[in-house]
Length: 250
Image 1 (cartoon, one colour):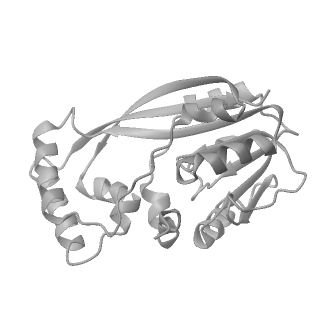
Image 2 (tube, rainbow, N blue to C red):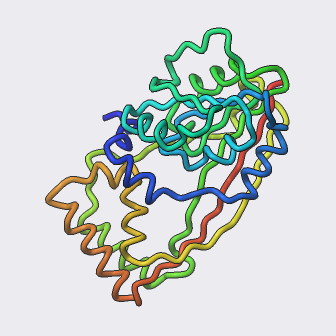
Image 3 (cartoon, rainbow, N blue to C red):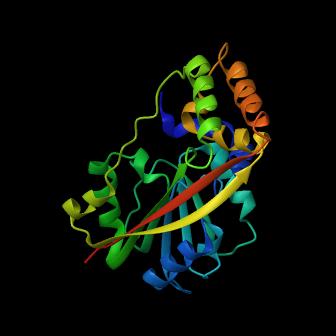
């Protein structure tokens, strides 16, 4: 199974349920890379554009490369009003960028799907000298604010969660230094979300291993999750930590 393609089956659900990044993170990316009119940008795997519009608004020349055919079409329609928006439906690992080089290459929870020995050198090659590679992801703490509810949810997982394949991506972002990048730094941003049962299910149903969950487990799993949250006042509190890794090509 190619986990990279599972999101392509749910573009509308993905757009509705996926976590967004905070304004401060985008402001730092824009300031650090000095984005402006005339600068060139590549986004790897935009999905449905959770990290796209703030970059587009700088007036840069923006290109996205998206593996999923349905996601690419959805995102193309979503941002068609921007003259500086362009998207290619192809695989970053094998796509030939020719002589194109970029001032900024960035990924929002996508670069971890590409083996570092493929992804990091390719990004390095297509960056201009002094170009920036930005990688962002969100880590969510579901336990600290809801220990009793968290335990009840884990019981549902133990009973019903048997996906066809486990999510195993484990990229070390600091390994970029092995491929020639310098000035490595990581910045953190924090956010709190309060979700009801339906909102929580909408969110987790955009996770790769949840998408691949099949019957006879799927119905019982989501019903059990909903019942657990309803029994705790129909509310769950999530603490998000957004990580931004910034590196430079000398």
